[in-house]
Length: 467
Image (cartoon, rainbow, N blue to C red):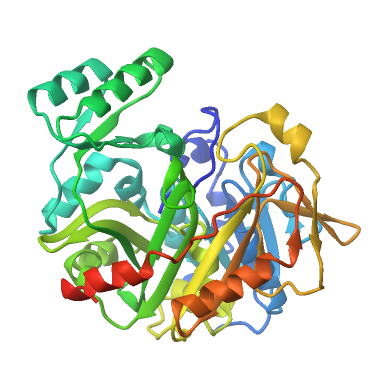
């Protein structure tokens, strides 16, 4: 489940070498003795959140509201105003390591530093270099699936457009163009072909060659297959997966009925389950490898499934956005305590809500594109107005608080994520829509059909024995 944040190429994907130059672990290692660490859940613990884009503001607020102390650092400079007035912000997360009982890294690229901190005895929720590579290097992710005995779709990686065009001409079929590395953050570049001869893919590749030249980076062509798109995810405590499992249905296109550009995500519907044939056929097979790595966090795999089988598409080895916030609507225990138990390697069952959860982004220009001038003219410092003072199920995204008013900040136009829950999907949708109708934001737009696919998806998944 990819992030929908668009960004410049000034921020490197892998932060290991970047941070190593600035972080001298010996400066604080003498204060970290494993035998002195207390892994009991503190009534008021200290949580340090290291965020790439500020997307975990809502998580920081939730932990703060549970009575814990929270400090938040944002790596991306244009996003650093996010969270002001809501939580305590820090300029250098490394100076607060000793203070923290638990450090949460909310994105890929921090795997090396997470491993180093764990080796020093710190409790850390975040990836490893291996899980970072599962997500960021599509070819590596597919090779690992094959290594673990998971059936995959035919795919091929390319470094230039001409080679890809010649490949499609020689092997006519329907393909999906998937950017890799840093370029994959530009979700509008992902293209799903529909022509069985691949002619539409060839036209798009030629257009990308004209507009991007040699700056596109490597990308993957993957054989397209029809079916239900579904992701399965679970939390891992360093040794094993924690149950229940989360099943998510993403809605990626900008407009209802899956029209318009790909955004990464506009909203999702989901439910929790104690078992899943899709999970058993994919993520479960990675349990021993993840334990060997000491991974602590959430691992998600997006798949296309049909009557012929389960076909994994891509990994997300971190929190998914907005998946995390919709999950919170279905988790019935304090999220801070849950993450503390996870990071300290405890085996437990997550207390979850029965039924369904659904959530949709409320957005303003220029989303899903980058346009600083448009953001400044139409969206910067716009006020989020509530008709009635009811904020349950309303998750602040790229906001700051001034004089108790919620103002839009950052640079992408992601204002809120609004959730709803219910024993049926329609009940969850109705709750979400009622909450959204209580909110006024100038120039706002959002999808009104999140969850509508469920009736059809359910019938097909049930008939294939995948529920």
